[in-house]
Length: 327
Ligand code: AVJ
Picture 1 (tube, protein in one colour):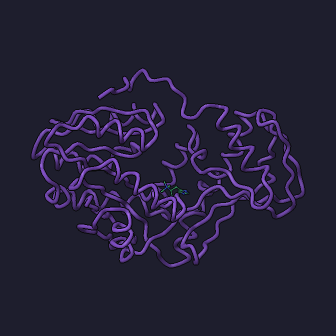
Picture 2 (picture 1 turned 30 degrees about the vertical axis):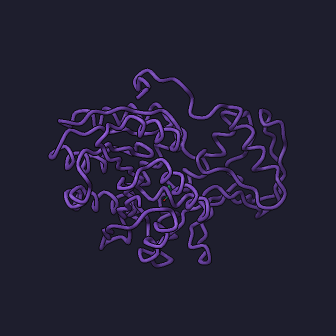
Picture 3 (picture 1 turned 90 degrees about the vertical axis):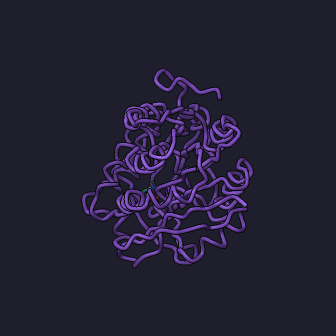
């Protein structure tokens, strides 16, 4: 393994050039303007998401945590012994703790959080570094590069358990999600496992409220992407001239977050080398959160080279943890 020293890593999450170029590509295109949702998560955006995850309207994170806490023992008994755990996104560490503690009761365990943000990696290490019989090796890489590097460190009789929690898979378009799961599968050996968290379809009002909370935290989370473009690319977005908007597209079974321009206006983005005009009511599409049906997961798993060994559903907030085994 070639672990990065997670406490001294300084590589920025994305190079400024990528950000400038992707902003230009997303805003200067004809048709629906869009921004990649990964750019919602700078320091401010990540802190706002932490607040979202404790809002009464947003039950997703609590459901994920409840399921892992309640069923960790059951989940790990379904795994072959000697497990190397690789987590895509280091998360808050809270929910991962249950799995690691359950595994460490059986054997010593290596935990490889994979995360582009050095701050998040460092937090993960301080949160989970104290568990007996668990050693942490962080990878400051993108998901697939990091997984490849982490899996390369497996010992002969190790099985890999990939954790992809919190329904982050829902941020991918359906076909991109399938391609991504196939890529994960290609890195794994038969018998390796993927624990996949998926938020499930629920009554419309509940879904809309979860992304449009009364306090306005999700609105701030969304508008922060424009503030970030101002901060990092020297743009002159007037934040008060855009409004957070949430839609549910039942065809695609997804929540969409948009930023709606309240007036005709134009914005200059110097470090992207462009100006962008907006007509009143025109939107920038900033995120999709696809929702799933528990019954559809086994077929999805099959198409990607896995079989669905078991599912655990939350009774308070429709959400599923799915244990997929590589075929
Ligand atoms: C962290 C990606 C799962 O899609 O529900 C929360 C992000 N966006 N509120 C989600 C989010 C708006 C969240 N994920």
